[in-house]
Length: 559
Image (cartoon, rainbow, N blue to C red; front, side, top):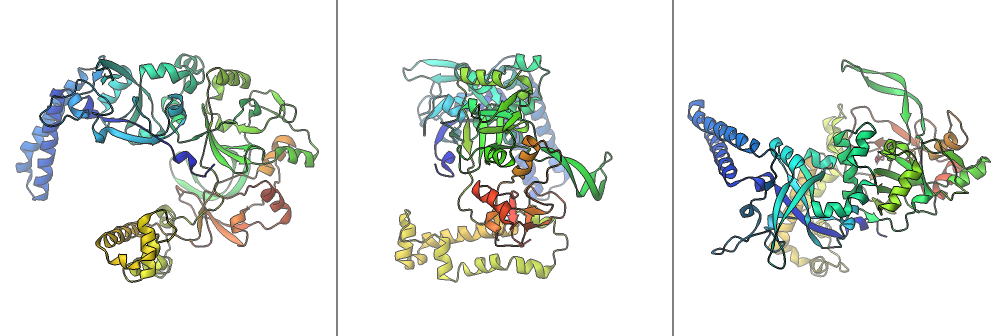
């Protein structure tokens, strides 16, 4: 299975905006409000005074007030999508009576990668659906509230010519969608077919009976089914358990934010959850680390031979789950240990067996994504990392940006640089790239010149925004799993583990003595230069189990 196989298959669906739900009267007021705003912008550009702009400003406020009053009148009544806004009709023909994929405007069609939700809906690669809608509400809280409470209708034109008034309800919104004013809506018919598989027994009534849940968090957990994933076809829920976190005290220099928001810089001892978002799987499950997605379960699964650890330490492979039930990993053939932080809604189930029973009954599935790659290319830095270098001198900036500067300068002068950036290769599947390698004179063609201009423009924008390619690798941040197992199975409260303070183990950088360990988004504190572990005993564990420890960004002495 390829490292990016979860980004291969796509399904097609509909994307609506708030104006698609407007009535004709609301749309007329909205257009007048926009025109008044555009006129104000034009007057600003012309340097007009307040008196000249005042009439347009008053008009804009008046139209906005009327529009808001009209919108509130729809509370309690589902809206209906305005056909003129979403369907295409050739000039001189009547507007279609309903929406179909064929008459849907191109701007309303979007694609997304296959997910657990699309598979539950029965969608295959390149299939389209009118049962799943992404709605952009664009800061219009009244529209959002009405859709969440009442839903909306779309008149669907069926293949036999009949019209079905299909009702849609709000399903969820991921954290990213919440930030960009989007929600996911589904038709009532398809929801009846898939809700058990996606909810895995947690209805709103059941959640409220157990104390309720933050709505934004619940939306994010439900949205896990929308993640681009490969189906985990050989996943066996009976081979899994959920265990407590590996937590411990860590002493070090840190910046502490007090209750009055002042920052204190000094040495402190704090409790750290080392396995936050990280679980373990045996080498028999996978030979690479990857991200897992399931009903209310998400996070990284790392390859580590727990059974071998217990055998070498002479301790029984027995551990309690988060409900206090004891499990023998060998007798029960347990292969995957999820941690409590990965199981987001664990407290709404009475025990693990209940979750498993519901999981099987409703036909729920797990997915895999973001597999650890065998070869990891150098990646770009982030502007956040550079911003923290407050003592960066002009001479250091010139040296740091020298390679990028020379590459941009040589792009229009050096033939070899041009061919490299255009991926010229005789064996390329792209006919033009292959032709460039065979006949470099194509560099003089207008098409090639335009391509080079676009490449140069992108390179300039990247450089200006602080993105530079250096000896940088983006890797998973994995805790010392040896220490975690000492804590779980040897019951050592303060395990020593394999890594000492200030050390990381990373096969990619094993020939280097030190490396910067940086995280993106970058926190505003001084980065620490970490020692690369070269001890044979430690590497025996990390290399034989196919894992290494690093942070999300690992830069080799360049920043």
